[in-house]
Amino acid sequence: LKWEGLLNFLNMSFVEDIIRSCVNHSLQRIMVLPNRFAFPLLAPTEANLLDMRRPKPRGLLQIRLLEVEGLVGTDFTISSLFTGNRSADPYVTISLGAETWRSSTVWNNCNPKWAVENAHVFFVDIPERQLIHIQVFDDGVRQQLQAKAKVSKPEADEIARHLNISILDLLGRRHDD
Image (cartoon, one colour):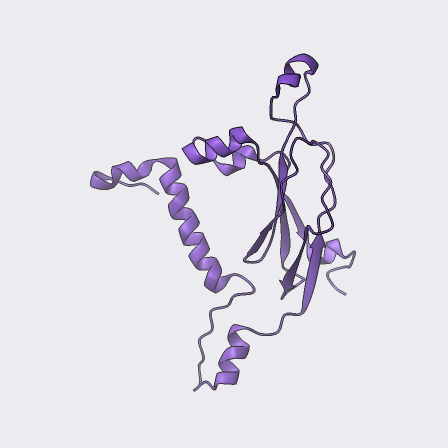
């Protein structure tokens, strides 16, 4: 986005991020699975319109977060001065379609393990095309202060690579089954 004239102050990156986030969220609510934009071509009945807007999902996928190994520590503590070891405060976000789930934070651990309660159920509409998007972030005090001050983008706090996994690949099935 390029703002000019009186709106030149909007050229700041955090304002651009806020605008982009609002637009994406608005579109997700109506056009990203499981949400749909339905426009009946014939005179709709209530049942038809409901089936068009909210058809039954093809299935449910429960994902339980167990553990992550080998994260790079980004946080300094007093003991880091003597040992050289850094820690991390990881949490995981998992997205499928328009829905995003965030795990709890495991503090001061580069090899975190989560409790059994860290599970979420997602609706699956088109398993052949839907991807599971997994990200690991650091939730440390430094990152929280940066987020409040809008010093860095959220991507800068990512401590692991993005994972985009097909649902069928996750289940060990071929796409032509």
